[in-house]
Image 1 (cartoon, rainbow, N blue to C red):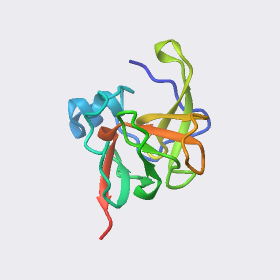
Image 2 (cartoon, rainbow, N blue to C red):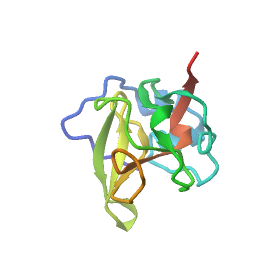
Image 3 (cartoon, one colour):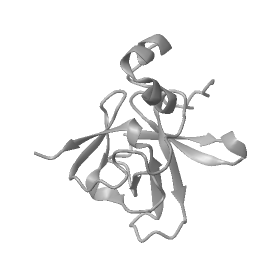
Image 4 (spheres, rainbow, N blue to C red):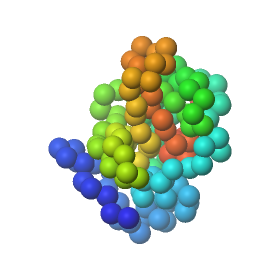
Length: 142
């Protein structure tokens, strides 16, 4: 599956497809590098309440803090804001017959999930970053 480049953004971590395949499991590769989606309610972080930082499973970049995670009851971990404005990049996704906003790790351009707005969640941003657990590694606070 080909992926369109991210306009105006250059990843800091660049690896060949062969290098990514050697580093990631088949399921991780399918989501992170081929923009797949793990089945709802199957991810390890969907219901976790552990305090810490969520990092990109592909390159270890910091992406989200647990204090921005909320229960959206959608089947995937949801956050109302990324850790910092430069931790993610967004691009239009027209796959599956709809227009969505894809969320990518700014450091390696791995697929994380999608962001949605205006759904009425009681969060400070009215955004839901719907992120695949398999795209993340949670590092608990000490």
